Length: 385
Ligand SMILES: [Zn+2]
Image 1 (cartoon, rainbow, N blue to C red):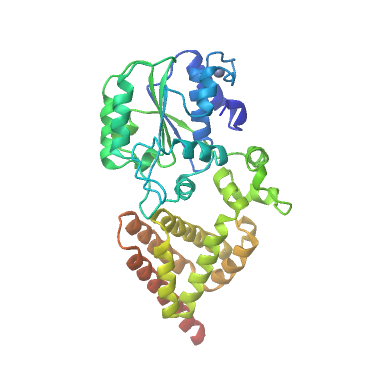
Image 2: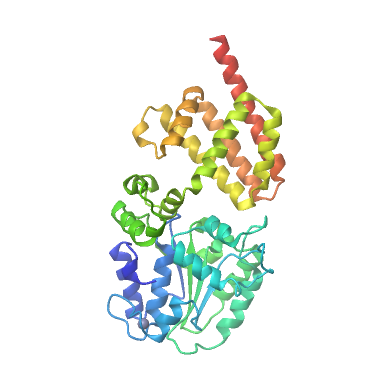
């Protein structure tokens, strides 16, 4: 990945180039901002630039031994740490070494992908991928060795918010202790508030904003060309993605439709108060892995926001596709603001419970029963009018 490939703001690229050229590279640097931004590609381009043998003032050369090794993610002085999990086909791989080829392929396909995309890519079982203590311990041994052939020994940690608590404490210990000047830690996070405050305070931070519409257009034509069909409406996708390149990819590949259908089906069952269908729906929710369960709840929260917007009669602000618009308008007509807020709080609570490993079946059944009660009250009100 090179700076020239990334349609990120020039001032951010210039700052990174300046750090490298002036040899003022921070010991630990955090790239943060919303999901679907340029944080990971920028960190990769920065890593490539730092160790390039013939860099120009704007970018790495792309042809030296270091650049070629980085392109294949086989650079001996660059270590990648990312969430790993037991996969359906593979043996447990806590350090991520076996998964490096998969991660490399994932980056090639979805350079703006997020946790759930990676989780799906791995084909994980119900265990949620995380960064293990073993991966960080491995790092401790790695940084003790002197750099082999490069200016910098770079440790790139993708999504440190998914570190196991023991891993987080091990990383804190590494950051607290003095290491050789050429050892650099680059962290890429979309939820830095979930990092230990003691880790965060040791990081030099750089905020990476969402993409502009022009940048999104460029990303779609450069990276997602293969996924585009004759019927893909790029202009609408740019608008709906709202600066989030991961969302653009989802819209193009239609992953979101599964959630929409599930959400619509779920709402209809709750409205009809059909208990046998509700039990089947609860089973369907339980069959999702934990990450997908949380993602579905996040999607439901997003749909509630859209329903709230629809109630305000500002349809032009709706960031939805046509199929979603229909159910949003129907629900917007029967749910008042207080009920939407109440449902919002219940879904957030369910998300909190799933996060803390409570039984998914019970959590989702409990949530669904509350929603059925809301609809029951709505029906009674309509009958009394
Ligand atoms: Zn080079």
